[in-house]
Image (spheres, protein in one colour):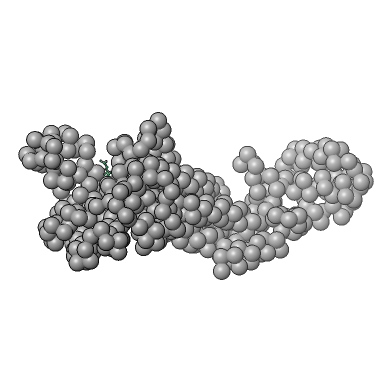
Length: 463
Ligand code: ARG
């Protein structure tokens, strides 16, 4: 709806209200209402500081702080009427405060601007989101550790090029994701530490002539310190971009794992069974059980990457300090955050619920000549062959087995010796998949003993 009068917050020099299209393109209330709690927390801290520094009276500040709580409860219980004419959450809250407490509300905006206000609110929102992401990552890591511990010695094929390479353990594969999500966790923590500076008091761009106490507001809002440069404080959004890039990397990890779950749950692989709780059926094919959650996680990376690129593009080339372009920061971050949280929770649920098919994993682990490297290593270790020659001899044995349509352990000793006369019965010890994984004892290797040690290390680290 178009207001015929000029804007009550900044309309002093305007004779007419905005065109309907102007109002539509200008308003952010449709989405920035999600920052209501942060906006009110920021305003309450600001009001307390204005009183402590003698800029407003204690009674005015008290009225503001109480009134703001009333506004918050109206928003929370859904009775607040948002107005597009009032553009954004900041002016909606202030206008309602005026209705509740009268003229004292007009003193709240002393020594600040919407520019430092929005920068503060958005930082608080992103900070909350980083904390929520940390919790979700910890839960996912917990689920992976549970799987890794249960299957520390279950064997499965390890792949390169999605071709069978060498046997690995289920636990080792799970722990690979623990490492990845663990780095995501540390990126989240780094981002939080770096972004925890308070822009409030930077005002429009230059600071203010009022004797404000920025340390006080920073502390009240849980920031480590006030930001040191007012131009920077109101005009950068690198904290949001750090969230989005951290979210993108994490989404990329989620997407890779989701892809593996899609493959592993297929009839051709049957490595895992996903629980009914995280699968869907087909409306036409009764036998189907589809890994939709994994597919959607795999797909969601697109919008999270997209948000990162979109905000990068908004910010590039913007002159200092604030420009209205920056209002476009929020929807991208909100959407990416919502989808990241959903993807993390869905992955955690799938991982927690899925059951690995140990027999199928083991059968697959031994196929595809997966212990060929063990055979070559045996030729080096026992017969003293140079590795290159051992590689060649093993290649001939693989070709022999392939021709006969069998796996390496099924070749007879005579057949082995037809390729190289010095091979002995002892070679069969290294052709088994369990021996193969147990022998991978180099630090970071797949041996069950090492997997268990890594599980214990992570558990201790996470407390
Ligand atoms: N809704 C605005 C935003 O999100 C608030 C800041 C407006 N500042 C201004 N100078 N018009 O960026």
